[in-house]
Image (tube, rainbow, N blue to C red; front, side):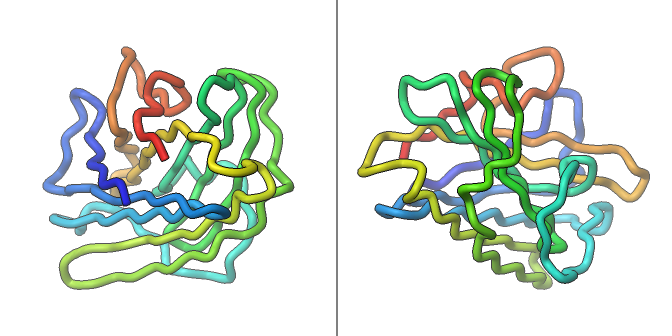
Length: 175
């Protein structure tokens, strides 16, 4: 299991929130957990609904993972909403060739609200995409929607003048 911490984009206030998590790879799955702690009063966390595949989840509170096989330009993006909605997209290169990744089934997601914060854990079946133990480069990020409608962008690292979760150099984790 590899632990991680996310950081707000420079100039964006954390609002007293801390985001950390963990990722683990098994032969056929990626297990991903996000934990939000701290002052959650200003964060919009929509209530769980019937889970469905949805688009544009990043326009509200959304947890994201980007991954690519070591040495490859093509990559995938997983979006998870606190309401249970999800999607996976495939890209042929940096922000190019985006299409819905149909070979990934709905992830098994567990959502928990507590007095200390919020957690989201997902188990994503990847065995039909990544044979064997080909090393993966992974980027993890989050968008937090605030009650005043502004969006906070969180990532392992921010490399440019604007938030960019697709930047391959930000896929810092190896699993």
